[in-house]
Amino acid sequence: MSALLVTQRDEVAGTKRARELGPFAPGSSSAESFINELWDAGVIVLSRAPAWRTSDHRSEWVYMPEEYGWSSNVSAEQGDEAAVPAAELVECLFTDLDNNLQTSDEPILVAMIRELVEDAAYVYIELEMHKAGLELSCEAATRKVLRTMLETLSLADICAIGWQAAKNCGKCYTDNVAKSRRHAANILPGQMSRIAEARLLKPDAWKVERPINRVSRIERVLHDVIFAGQDEFFSWPLDVYFLEIVVPRLKNGCVVIPG
Image (tube, rainbow, N blue to C red; front, side, top):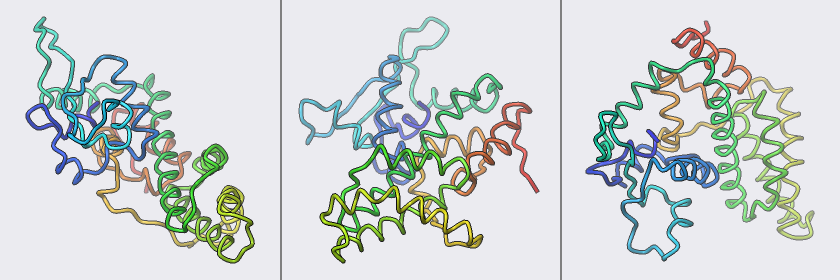
């Protein structure tokens, strides 16, 4: 909710500032998941939609949530039925996230981190496949490979693996090794697994770097508010990230930085 409302200006999302901060979530899958959860809980309302939308705008904001205006539907504890202004609510939420996290919050926090990292990796690979002239047609198999890799490889490593795998798939098509574009796209999961194995022999293997405006606002809340600005979300494997950052933060109320 903090990530969605942080771009609010006069109760309406400021699209220019939203783009400067990065997207709400890494991709449409995570955006739909989190916004639907807020919507179903009744804590947000859609206050503005772009003129180009169709009547079925709820299905469209999944892909462009920054183009819409969102307002809180949360009132103050003192009995005032009026919704708390977005800026005030965001400050309250930031304070709560900073001071009141407990060890019991670990399961839901870890689940959110896993979902964000997986979707970030998937969106990156989907874009690289598009650059190779192919459509990512094996989502379930690709996400299965990603879930396995994310436990022991960093997002920076996985994006590099996806970049090379997409390039290989494109070459298979242009060299007529694959019978069709779909056939070429379907070899992506296997390519990723083979490239990951080969990279184990190269401890200094090339990794992807991403600009700050590609980091989603949900990730920024995790980094800047909960984990005191530690942006290891991208450069550490999940098992190390959980052990070194998440668990100490929840147990001790502070971030422990190794080394």
